[in-house]
Structures are given as C-alpha cells and as structure tokens.
Image (cartoon, rainbow, N blue to C red; front, side, top):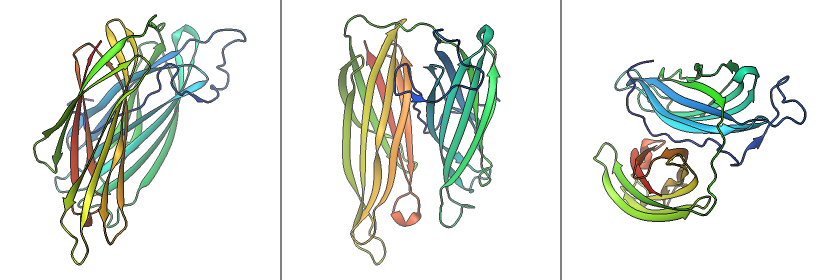
Length: 318
C-alpha cells in the first residue's frame, strides 16, 4: 500500500510483558514439550486505513506475548466516505492475538477481530446505530515475513482497515536493578470543530518504573439551549495516566492511557455520553515528543455541537 497520510485519532493497548495477560489455550498441536521453557513472541502490528484521504497508517506498535496467553489491541479511527459530502464513520477496533512458536523461528497467530462503528453525515442512517463486525484468521509467519489481514470493510463509507503483522522470538528483557525516576512533560491542546488547536495546559509529572503518574482535568462548556428546551452544557473530563515500564538500550517503554468522557447534559433531557478510552504503548528516547490525537464526535445534531479535538504531547526525561 502506498500514499500514506497522517495518522488520525487512534490509540491502543497491546499487552506488554507481565501486564494483565489474558489466559487462553495455545493452538492445537503447537504446545511446547513438557518441561520446556517457552520463549515470548514479539508481535509487531501496523494498522492501515483506506478511505477518501487515500491509504494511511493509524499506527505501528509491538509487544511481547507468551505462548498460551493472548494480547489485546484496541484502536479507534474515523473513516471518511469517498465523496466529500458523504458519511463519516467512527470505528472501534479490538483485536485479540494468541501466538505460538514453531520450528525454525516461525510463529503461528490466531487472530480474532471485532469492530464496532457509528456513522454520521450524508448517507448515514437517520438514527445512528452501532454495528458489530466479527472475523477471525489463522496464519503462520516465517522470521521477517509480513502478512496483511483485512480487519474491516464498511458498506457505508467504503473505507477499510487492515493489519500488517510480523512476529519473531522476543529478545530477553532488561530489568533495572534499582528504582529509577522518569519525568514527563504533558501538554494538552484543544479545538472545537475545524478551528485551530489552542494550548490548554502544561503539567510536569514524575514516576518510578512500574509506578503510574496521572493528571485529571475537567470543565464545562455552555451550549445553546435546544428549541423549546431548557439550559444545557457539555461536560469534558479527561484523565491521562502514564506508566513507565522498562528502560533498555537508551529507550523507555511507557504505557499511556487516556480515559474520560464528553457528556451533553440538559435540564430537561437524558444525558448523552461519549466515553473516551485510549491505550498506547510508547517506546521513546529521552526528550523525544510523542503526540496523540483524540477526535470526539457527537452522535446527533440536536446535541448542540458536532466535534471536539484534543492533542496530547508527552516528553520523557530519564
């Protein structure tokens, strides 16, 4: 695939060594011999999207998973229809991966994919409804071999999501012998609709390896009253959680989570909530900035707003 554009609002959670592995049996016929120590499998995944903007990368991530366990990848992206005035589709992708090592360094992957989507705009259903699509795949990859697996194809926007996979035996982890401090500079910018992003806040955080640092911000935005209705506002609440896991080879592995919600609250109508839950595993050098964009769209025009964008930047010192 060629012509990749910039990554859209996306984030992920891919299980790192020792982090909440979900127990699941290995593929039939691929169990390690009795008493044999199983090596971890390093799985690399690039999530690729195709829509009106062309072919672009949602993100490239990797994690180590032990055979007999599984890793879970969660990403969200917005796909735009082929025509400029056509529908846009908010897609939440969840992928469960169970690897097994085979002879000569090859690995077998069992992949279960679930996508949930909501459409809005021209050509979308009059009442947006969440659609669920499920598919599975089994494949065997040789060392350094890459394979594409289609994850989702939309009947509304004609957009597509695919996974480019690669796997190999994971190298031994390097564990620090003594506690080590990591300093983070967290910067947050925000914008309504298509307006320019404006800085919202900067905050310094500190944590030791294996300990989390977090920052919560919350505020209310007044909205125009609905015709014939009472006052209303939008509550915005976001928490950023940083967990430095490992320093190795001059690089830091950090688990980043952003959670919260945007909620339309009215005196006369039920609250409409838009949850936020983004997870990502970062591997960064000292002073290297990492940006994460979050794009939240309303589910209907009657909410009094249509879109809010956030940009988070994290810089680490260790």
